Image (tube, rainbow, N blue to C red; front, side):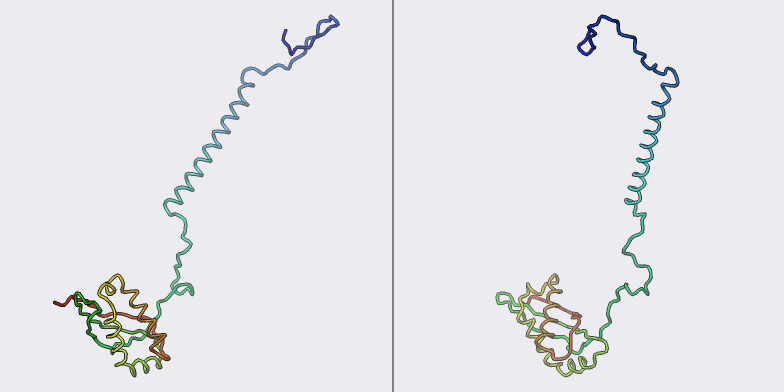
Length: 186
């Protein structure tokens, strides 16, 4: 007798409880079999779905959201066109270095708005002042500052100086160098 059995102190035999009969044979096996088949099918569907999504992402099969296929679209950027002032010509000068003397040869182009006739007039009127500005600007630099990796900083610096301190109405949009040679003199 176990601790969980009910004790009957009246001395009567307990009536046999009618326990439900367990199904035997195929009737007992079918629900378990169907349960495992359903779990297996669910797992296969899940694995295939995850695999397809991963393949699409990795192969770039989806459409990119940043590609604009219509070149006439207003969202496609167009590089602006500028007029070029080239009359400064080639300017030769020396750098600020004292231990070793370097020679600098510069041929600079100033770009301004395409239809800005006032800028064209002002730049042409200041041609000799512009040549002097280029000479004094590069003679105030060390050869180390004139290396090719510093070219974009030089262009930005020249553009800012011309727009803020030098020109009255014209606005410089870009600076280009046809030639920027720095050579050691012996």
